[in-house]
Length: 289
Image (cartoon, rainbow, N blue to C red; front, side, top):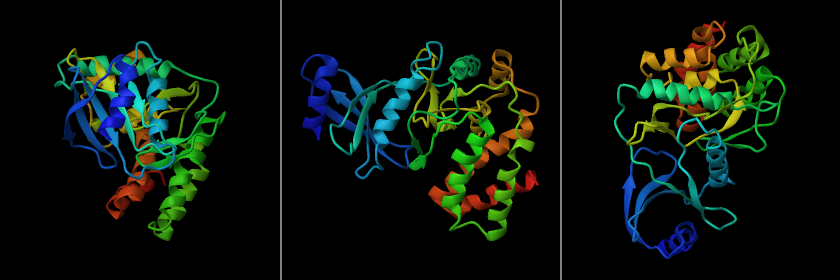
């Protein structure tokens, strides 16, 4: 594998390089990750999965490249090399040193995320499907943002979860999907380019306090979904949300809607990690009934 990596990185650096050391990193539950020290003094980041789903790493690379097109958005690690295989088992990325957040990081992050969300297209969705964690994420193009969230987000997760959802919970979820327009105010909202999985493990400041985001589940959707995800497993400081609202104001009522967006992620966690997330799913459903 080291020789294969060296061959792939040679055109990246313009000269022969070899892997000097490999240091495993923690934090991932889907892929194995390592920092590779190269003989030219550079470091790169390796993501490896011996049995990835179809187009798994190719979709990630495409998503990172799309996010990087926003010039004033967050910093995005560059995809450097993808294994040359029908089913690639690894992706090599630019390595970015993580720093501790300074006092201005939250404000800078909010402003750069707002710039990312200003990137738009005619339809909700994307020109290809990808993944949320290891779960397939459908991105069929749709002109209506509520229909997109219902049919490409909630309902596919509901189908996957039926093996573990009590009948009453499944029925409540179906009712919610049927009247979703009663809860989502998307007037004036254009399809926004978003990270798609913006929990606290998928962003940090670099050494210059530039906000960096990675491990995306990219699509054009309702931008409130990205903000809501930052509140699901821990919350950024309040000045992040204040700065975002100042840079790109939301429709009134976001606080009442945010749990609805996070229902998608709770269902996904239920499907990936099991029944410990069922109570959280049911709590959200009760809120909207």
